[in-house]
Length: 89
Image 1 (cartoon, rainbow, N blue to C red):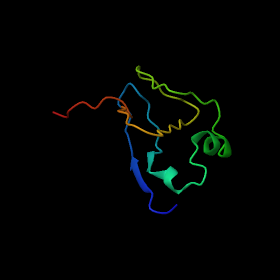
Image 2: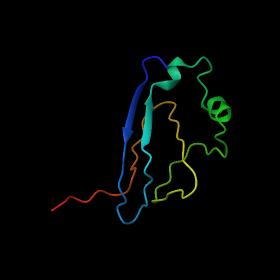
Image 3: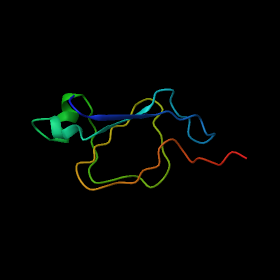
């Protein structure tokens, strides 16, 4: 991938959300380098099925046996990943 910003975040278990040892990986601007510019096509190519459209859950949730893939085609979104962070005292 050319000029795609890749950002990784690691999260520890916060007691509520049992985070995975694998990181959250964010690929910024990935579609600008894809001829199709189509999330559905890319998701299907990679075997990422069971697609939801136009929804971000408002309650905490996690997947114990799978990873989640999210594509934001335009606009902006604010997400909380990895559980709530409490200030260390």
